[in-house]
Length: 239
Image 1: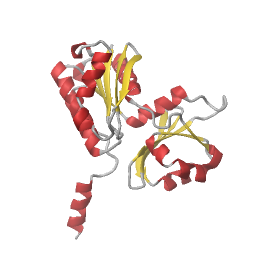
Image 2: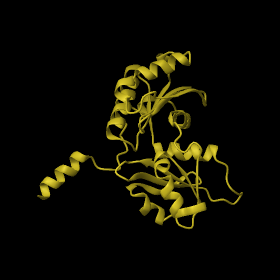
Image 3: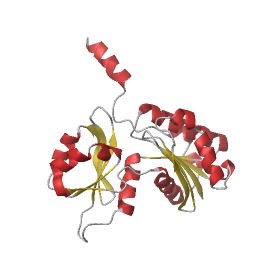
Image 4: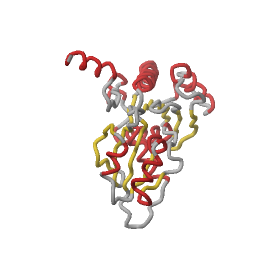
C-alpha cells in the first residue's frame, strides 16, 4: 500500500510517502508559511524522489489540525483535490495523535512502571497553545486552547513528556513550573507527515481500503479556537 501524506499544521509543515508500512521519503517545506506557493509542487517533487507516480498512490492522508486556519484549509483542499482526481480514499489524522505516536515510538520509558504521560502542544500564538494529554497512547484530555501556565497547574506532580512546537516555544515556562518532572522529546517539534502516513495506512488496513468509507469531501479540520471573524461577529451582536 502506497500512502501520500501532508501536514500543514505548522509554519513549515511536511509531506511524506510510505510504502507497505515504511516511510520511503519525507521532506520539510523549504520556506515557512509558504504552503499556498509550494503546494502541490512539493508533493509532486516528493513522488518523483520516491520513483513513484501519482496514480500508484493507494491512499491520501492529511493532518486535520490543530493549526492555523489558512494552513489547514490549504492542506486539506490540496489533498481533497488529489484524492478526488485519482478516485482514492482520503484519511484525516489529528496532529495530536501523530505527535503522541512519535513520542511513544522514539522516547524510551524512564522506568518499567512509568505511566507514560505525553503532553502534545501546538503553538497557537497569542501566548497560547493547542493541547491534549495522552497516557500510554490514549487521549485522556479533550483538546483545548489555553495559556501554558493554566495547563501546567494540572500537571504538577506528574512526570510528563512534552512534544510539539508549542512545547518548544514555551520550554522555559514548562521547566520553571514543573522542574525535573518535565522532559522533552528530541526533536521537540518533529516533522509529522511520515507518521501521518503510517497511521492512515494502518487505519485503512484495519478497515479496508475502500474510497467509499473515506470520501475526500468528508474531511473536517480540527478547529479548537474560533476564528477571528466569528469572534468579531459575536462582539458586534453584543454591542
